[in-house]
Length: 109
Image (tube, rainbow, N blue to C red; front, side, top):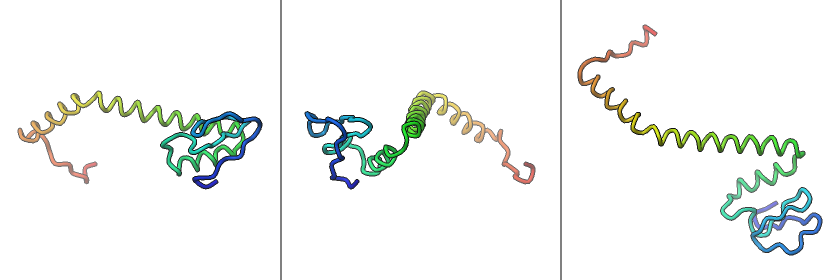
């Protein structure tokens, strides 16, 4: 399906306004875009995934949701650790200035 094409309606999907998402059977009706702001690449991926059997769709959907949750959790942890990271960096700089570090000898590893 190309960017501007309307998806075929499956079942009775009358009454949906442009821009709405309606599920008629297993086919999502596209009037405008699936979700405002979705890129064409993501929309194309969703169209392809929608052609798979339901158990495969669920597996891929769960994988994507898990990845997104992991990304959010990492971002939150990283944002919350800025003070600790700054202190570690300050300590490293102080140790270098005090001559308390040795150059890494790769041959000794």
